[in-house]
Image 1: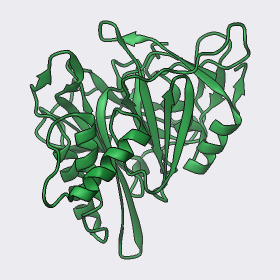
Image 2: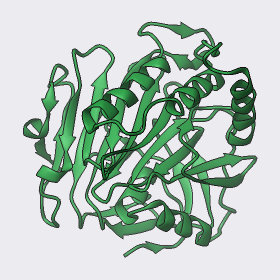
Image 3: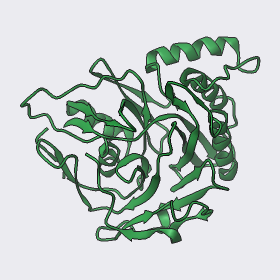
Image 4: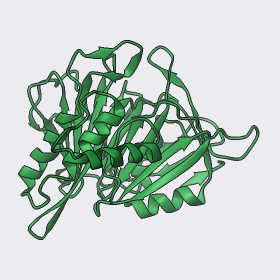
Length: 343
């Protein structure tokens, strides 16, 4: 049950420059939906993996006004600095990712109002814990006005973010703030998200390049708009009838075209820096794939082979201990008290 004294999504989060792409296909009569994502930043962001079962009591902030809930769905989440959820996927097949969006201005809760406050460290967990699909998440957002009060990280960088959720049908919901106003974009056509400019301007840029024709030329810099155009072209020009292993290879290959070489950065633009890690949320397959840029290969968490029943332990993969882990990492998960949110 969700209880609230109000929602001003407040505080800290780590979700930096990145690219997000949705693959929608089918292996025979079996649908395939996968979400690929890269995380790019100037400084290393320690990231651990947690698995939370159903029935865990959580809160959005340590004081009122806040939201309190008991998780309805188990999930696997990536946690930056062991203090804030960057992204994740729940057992119902809902994936959510937070991406840096320079220029974002959140709606701030009026002073002394009853609008709930949710730390940015917990917003992804809130959606993954409570909703099984985009339709439910969209309905909740429209029925529950909220504001956001983001704090800084990494020496003063403001946490300006937008988010995207995708479910087993391939439908996506984008949540984006501009000048204190929340805009939502919903549909299966929203297969790509990068950083800035806002979605309407980004779609206009993409439309221009569609007229140029990607087989002739594509923009090749690491700028957000260029990455968006490249990802958009490729995801719309690859086969959608691939077998599952090939579909996984396909989305990982596309993420490679929008990754930034390790060690590369542009002075004054921390969001245009090296890709530190990439992930693939295999929504229809139930696996969460992860790879650090300097590790030899991918590892993954198979949610279908873990107990997510109420009372099951919270599990943690401390990547500092397993940086070279390969393959299914279920066996490397250890019981944990859970991460401590940096509110």
